[in-house]
Every structure is written in structure tokens, then in C-alpha cells.
Amino acid sequence: MAVLFLNDEHVRLKSYSASTKGAVSTIRIDVEVTDPLRLGFLLQELAEIQAELKSAKAGKSKPRKSAAAEPQLALPSPVLRIAHVREND
Image (cartoon, rainbow, N blue to C red):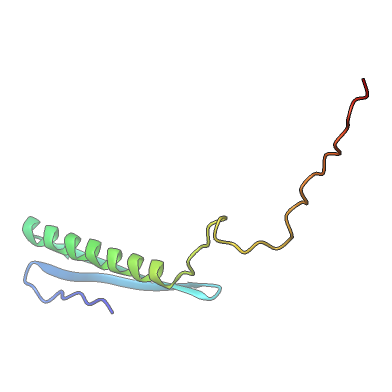
């Protein structure tokens, strides 16, 4: 779970809203930052949270099997039999 702390004199929660579309809800949060250094730290924290969520999502996905690792479902084609033909002299 990701946590963001906005208890700084240079960071202020300006507004927030929520919308729902189907089964997915989206929360929009507007934050006002008056210090460029604090803005940089906040953006870095958000990037780390995004990377953590992306790696957690990638870890949950099923690993894909390569074509070589898949079991063979049919028997291979039989070896061709070439008849031995003697030429009569």
C-alpha cells in the first residue's frame, strides 16, 4: 500500500473529486506546492509508487510459456521410406 504525506507548510490539498465509469472508479487529487524542492520530492515519491504498483502487477501476471517449452500435442510425421531400387544392367 502506498502512502503520501502532505503535512508540509509548502504543500496544500487544493481539491479532490471522484468519478465512476462502469466497475472502475477514479479519484483526482489536486495538490498545490509552493516550494520547488518539495515539488521534486513529491514527484519522486509518486514515481516510486507508480514503479512499485507496476512491478506488483507484473509479478501477478501468469508467466508465458515459450513455443519450445510447450508439450508436443501430436506425433511427429513418420520417416519416409525410400524403396531400394536396383537397376538391371
